[in-house]
Amino acid sequence: AQASLNDLTQEQELRASALTFLATATTIPADTLDGLIQTNQPIEMQEAAIRELAVAWPKHFAKRCLQSWPAWEPAVRNVAKNQIHRRAEVATQLLNAASIPSDLQRLLVNHPNAGIKEQATKQLGKPQADPKLLEKFAQADSDTIDSAHGQQVFSDNCQICHRVHDRGNDV
Image (cartoon, rainbow, N blue to C red; front, side, top):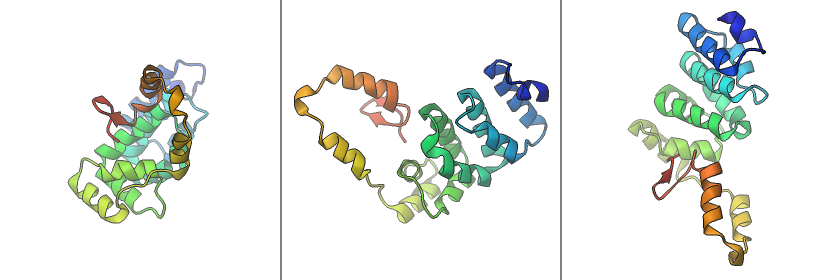
């Protein structure tokens, strides 16, 4: 399994399975997992490493989320989001951070654990929208609105992290 994990010529699915297998037999060092969650790694490896990092090294995982969140692809962030939802210890570590990105603030304020949700709401309040993003949408020309195109853009790019009516996921 170790050889498959280290062999960059192997299929990514096999490498990710090797990582998961090794993690059940032993604790993989945090620095090894750190290398596998970098954006230069295939998404499958990032996702598998995130799952293992959250289980074996929750404090370290929280720190990595704060550092890497903006750079991760939406699919990778979704795996991290699921781990934050499943592991109250990770959410608590995030709440102890000095600065929390607005995406993660929304995630914590809407956490399924009532205690985390209450603490996050008390500590963070309601997350504010990004002023730059609001300005970008305010400048949109209402004469060129194409509802079908907008729905497709939402499906392709947004619904992994956002919900509108009955489509997408709650953050």
